[in-house]
Image 1 (cartoon, helix red, strand yellow):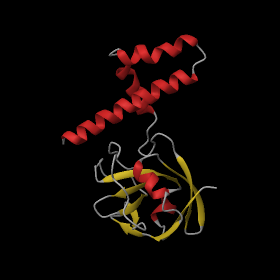
Image 2: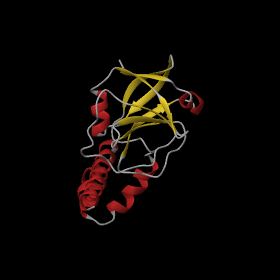
Image 3: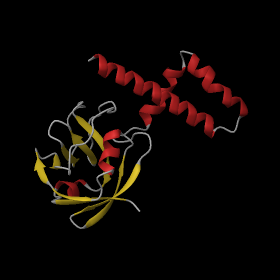
Image 4: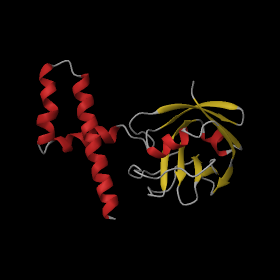
Amino acid sequence: MTTSTLRRALTTTATVGVLLLAATACSDDSSAEQTPTTASASSSAPASAPASASASPTGSDRSTPMDIRVTIDGQEVEATLNDSPAARDLASLLPFTLDLKDFHGTERIADPPRKLTTENAPEPLAPKAGDLAYFAPWGNLAIFHKDGPSASEDLLVLGHIDADADVLSGADRITIEAAS
């Protein structure tokens, strides 16, 4: 429990730092260069950062998304992986094709070529329809065609597939490749 709390605190601190750096880099005002130093030392910086951070994450958004090419039953769809360690590990296995099966009428699942890393996992998020996730205890990938259960440390959201729920819910085969 203590490790999880520490991990969340470090993730929040890193997110605030990245947001402050991004705000500074995008500013044309030379006085903005001093803002991160002043803001990070004040107690008001964390209060303003979560508002920005909560506006952008949608369950699968992390730092820097990576485009991937996904083909579902012969139909190419747009997709991205987030910048989590598990998503980068999945990317290292590309390309591969998997046969999918239904799981509880909410997701389609399959086993990747090997288990993925779960080290330095980001804070858990509840999966949304279209999310590509990894269920660590079983070592399987899940493609959600309906919103999933509440957030769990065992379920790591890796990215998002931009396809209709009907396409995802009936998917029998998926090919994932690095985008060229």
